[in-house]
Image (cartoon, rainbow, N blue to C red):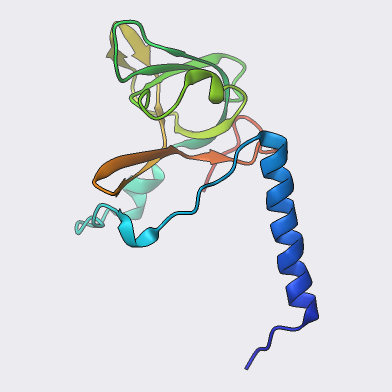
Length: 157
């Protein structure tokens, strides 16, 4: 049976200190989540074979710019660095969850090999990945963001 010694307590304290330091730097504090009030969608019953899954090209993308799409209540327009040397535009219906300026400079995950889809007259060339859940009867959404040290264009496996 594993016991918690002083070494483990100091590691936990260091981790807590690191989280507090990061919160102080970013000015953000994470509110505690009551997971008993969180509901997620059920998992798909239908399985996808590996070959179908492997066709999707997931890449790390750097958010260079993000603006609200005029005349749309839902869409944000992202200008992304996908590592190719050419800016990529993706539209995402996450406007009610994020202010555009808070996403600039972040590193997100996108599927980059989807065919372009026109929305509000703008070609969207891919899809950003988000996590959706329900909490206290309201839908919640978190754009999947990763460590900013991951370079644009890094492939996810």
